[in-house]
Length: 141
Length: 372
Image 1 (cartoon, rainbow over the protein chains, first blue to last red):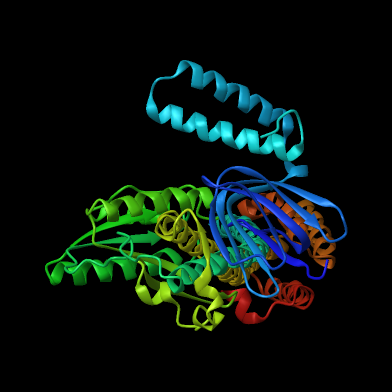
Image 2: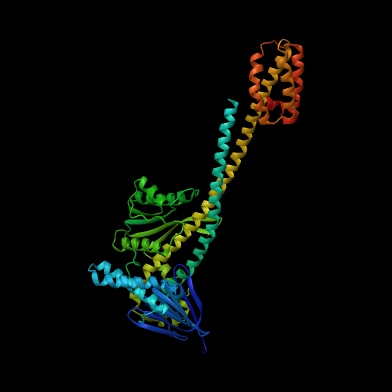
């Protein structure tokens, strides 16, 4: 590959990841999954809860759960900035807790009729799903 | 009586010493937290820089700027002040600075016939403004020394809602900016509406993308992105302010506690001097009583048994004078003093000279001290 992408995953509290990669896959609101490689056109998108993958130049893949935010792609060499509201590295995710949360929210969705609670549960479910996909445990979107 | 003052002073010195321990501990804790808080301020910088970049790029790409958060109101009727203070005191003028700045703004508004509301952040702001009957909106507290982004989000949602619903026409942040560990300043920053100047960015970066910047692809469309982006931008600003305030709080507290510790040290020193003087005075007066009593006995021949014993006893004691041993001798004083009905004679005066002088030499007492 001729050119590497400069990738930064930033949350309000810290810089989660910063490095060079061949490709980044993330998911935009309404647009589905999207991959960026070097030379991609300038792009600006709103992200949903998703499993973001960073394919590093050394061949390893970094898995992250990104909960909402923005992605900006610009410049030469191409730079991908993911501004997340909250983001977690796969190794920091508590799988048992995420599974439990997923079940809990699914139950709430079946039983509830109050709009606010449903919205909460939908968001919680999406977060739990993103976490589980990022850790590669029993869920694929 | 003399022993009484000494005991009181000893108590005060002890109290001062434990106060000093507490202030010293607080000073050290604050000192170590400054570093952590500073790191958090630094860690938050990339996000706020990038989000500013994104807003600028959107501006350059021609996103529509009729978002309610960008449109300033023609007539500012109500201003909302978000005053960020600490939850605790013992941090010098930290809280007072923000309170005074906010109060000044509010008074200026009232004078010019405008309305205001205060959103206190931190217990100290809440208490201060509530006590003085200012108009308060919801208050936020319990996180001043270690704010999280979640806290910033709650405040952000609340003030954006206040603004968008038209209850207020302007939101301003009052907080203490952390410059270095040695200097902080209270600042007043406009928060909403976001001024076009902040968004369009004066650093020319948006313009310098030489055409390529304007060919952004958007998903979804720019206006929609801007609508999701702006609340995040406000939250990031509030978060940065909270972090700055927390770092400043620790810096202020460290300084306040350092001077408290120094003051405690000074007080302990001067109290100890007074205490020692009182102790020496009481010892001296006790010795004077003993010696006086012994001298009186020396003069009388009819109670010889007492005289012999007294002479040897006091001579031995005075050879090695120390505070406790002199005091232990004091019960013995009672007997000779009671028996001292014999009038002074010439020999008695002569014997007084010797022991008093020897006490002076050993205890390092100046004559002035002995009298005080």
